[in-house]
Length: 245
Image (cartoon, rainbow, N blue to C red; front, side, top):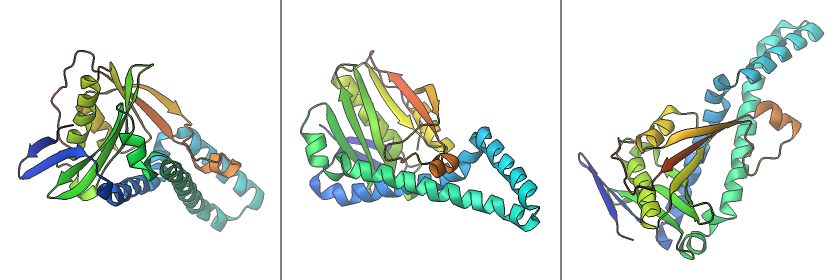
């Protein structure tokens, strides 16, 4: 597949199929991107779940009624935030382990063995700074955009757009009708990128259980996340021009 080049001011982003030598950098970028989601899920995500806030408030009232201890009440929010961070990190580590035991641990076998799957890297200033993969499903006529991650220092340089457009082109050239993706990110920038590529949100799963989650009582208490489902119809073979990310 040909390389894709996108110019953005002084930056030139080249998107190409990955090579075996890229694997350590791909895994590093993927890992760092996932680790960013720990704080995103634990802290930013909290305000998106009023049911969790109500539960923690009820816990605070019950704790005060039982102990009548003001210092413990003051400490409870810290305990809650620490619990959310701990379990968010554990779930995301579980997701990482699942990914590494499958495609991200053996990219060559998973993405080069079949014509309906591919993985690309974005190169900026001779460095691998982003990754994205496509997985086609012929029965349903869709391509799943997955594993997208961009190095933090290289965002807003057109990297995310170039990677996303590569997946759309892949779907069009192979005759697929739709490109779909799912995300648990709460950061507005991630959703802005998908909208700029032409995707629209077609559903939200509240209380989504990611691969690798253990679903223990404590995990259910401190970890809750939404899964946004995005879809884009590419049947007409046209790919809209996009903004920058």
